[in-house]
Length: 236
Image (cartoon, rainbow, N blue to C red; front, side, top):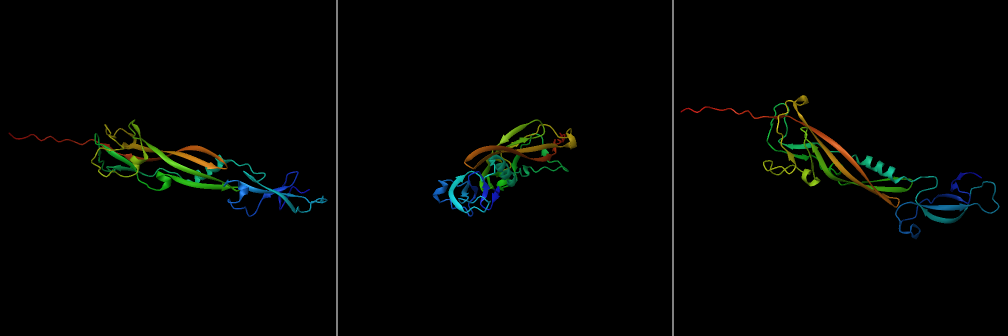
């Protein structure tokens, strides 16, 4: 008895394999599902004991995966996440730092945001991945961004707070920081600002659901200086 034929894999009772083409999801055989696969169990005609190609189909039914296939929805979800290419876009800052001619002053508030607008930069992003007739759909949502400013300070801003540059750079920052000391004593003479995007990821497929977490980073060097004060003695 051949283990495999055009009809599928021998199970001991019949040759089992996916129907090709698969019936539409409107077919009652899916029982309302929109995932998995419809299999056909094809028997050997009575008296056929020579391994001749089976010809009598006697059962069609739904299964989560084809025979011999182990469905791993988490692995499929991780593949979909990789296809998203989630990233943290460049850090936007006002005033824009100038390493050659430092213009960020101590005690002067600086505004932060993320200079991007693509779904894989600010979310939400949705991607589906399929394998062996099964599909997992993944949605990634940016929940917040944690800024580390290189001087020991760390704070988290919401997606709404970092989604765009400030309308008024002279107003107190919604998401920002004030350095209290110049960066002269730092490596390279700069503070390194790191933005860590926190992604909440949900997936669904194969009748299952789950969650994943992921962080992505971007950095920016900022030279912070003190403003010299020149006193002029008045004439009296």
